[in-house]
Length: 157
Image (cartoon, rainbow, N blue to C red; front, side):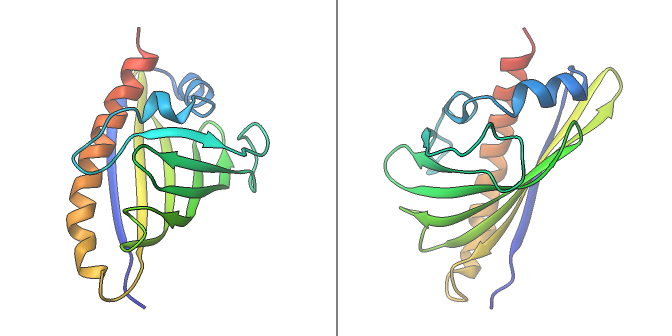
């Protein structure tokens, strides 16, 4: 099996970790991930969510603009420090490249605010497509930086 690729992006946001976690976790995904970044589409909607997105095992379907979807399952939940999730059942343009993703959001106190880190471990669909992961990883870092800026804009008013 081909090796996964780990990528991450961080941003300091002048909001306390407790407040940031409380306000960010229930935020509708289309609010936070609302813009294209190169070929990476925004999130159109979520469907079939189980629970309030505050317990391990809860899941939902994430639908992307332009086609494509994935199943998201909460794999860890440790307020206000972190939460993790796994993306599976990837369809659409990413399907030939990605079999699954392990995602994690980390919230660390930093001065009078929080250092937010978003991390993805991307598992390639096959050994044939694995060499393309670094290119996708660079694009994802730009998408993540854009999304973290949007998060900051949403929370700092």
